[in-house]
Length: 175
Image (cartoon, rainbow, N blue to C red; front, side, top):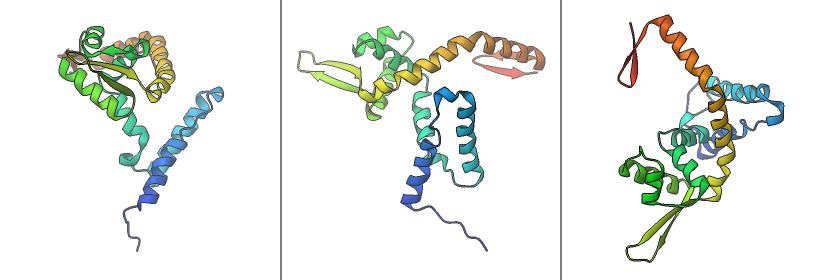
């Protein structure tokens, strides 16, 4: 009889580390190398050796995949901003969401917050070295999205016609 047990901290760290190292991709090798690395992750999952809650990839993607994080990072790539100035640079963001996004990015070490002893106090946000290191993959993703947006829009329209989808608010409803 096989019994299951919780992984030790060392095993959990190894699994989380393996999640990251298995995604090391030789960009010169192209999409085949990327596909092999991603396939390895799913093989780990199928074999029960992958714990999504310990995976740094999922943890990071949860943060950067939210509504506002990438826009804030893109704005801060150009220059440091004060809070109000950053809010004007991203006009759709509420003060509450800007505050929450900045706190999360500071907590994750992607930006730094500097308070200057002026009256009233002045606060400036800028990308940290870690945040700067994210600009290369972010630029790649933005370029891909720009390049593929028309293709994706066409695919959506074709799908919507094919399954008779009706827009409802921000979502879709299939008839």
